[in-house]
Length: 247
Ligand SMILES: NC(=O)c1ccc[n+]([C@@H]2O[C@H](COP(=O)([O-])OP(=O)(O)OC[C@H]3O[C@@H](n4cnc5c(N)ncnc54)[C@H](OP(=O)(O)O)[C@@H]3O)[C@@H](O)[C@H]2O)c1
Image (cartoon, rainbow, N blue to C red):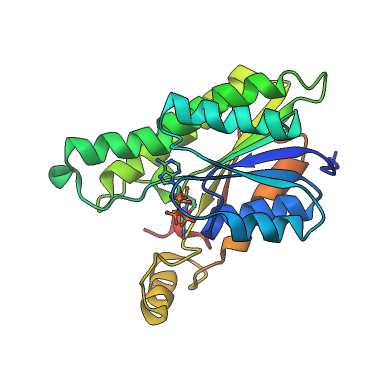
């Protein structure tokens, strides 16, 4: 069954800009009120653009790799909206470096932000969704190609995202049947800041079967699909032009 999201409430982490912002706007466009989580990027423009769609939006700053930060996010959603239906874990770090050159600090930060943060948010969010009297909720984790194969050049990142996929499956088993938990595996959808258009086009061509980069909105629509479709849990949806099959 396709769920009607009108009037429901979402938390999107890392939603002030880039892919997280596109996800927040997608859910808002489907009638959801949104708590825009941010860490260091000003969220005002995203909040304004969401409100322009006719739904409510509020912002909350937090470091989601800490228990206090996660408490702040879920305290804010209850204070502003009084319920939670959807959580999207998009906040992430993207450290470069092979395993043999990765410092303990880099390793721990990747696991803290990319894995422990979503774990803490899942625990906090799911306990609120369980209060939704028979309606439950939905969690979507944003992984990447590190799920499907070793990523030698970004060892800490790849391992953290691979573990995020296992967290997704573990949470799907733990919280069924009230709460569905799924993941998206984006490919190249938005260039890192400062990268030239030509270089980005080349990456899209080299990495994907389709020979081109995607867009943040491709990921956002996939998240919207997983949130709406009520018979899908424990799924990993590649939105990557076939990158996971191109070695
Ligand atoms: N861009 C792509 O092509 C691509 C490809 C594959 C997968 N993905 C995945 O898609 C998601 C979004 O990608 P993106 O390119 O938009 O990422 P991004 O530009 O690196 O943004 C990451 C977000 O994470 C937040 N963040 C980082 N550390 C944090 C912390 N300690 N606490 C709370 N928030 C923190 C940042 O918040 P502030 O800016 O507010 O500090 C930022 O909004 C990520 O999970 C990424 O791995 C992206």
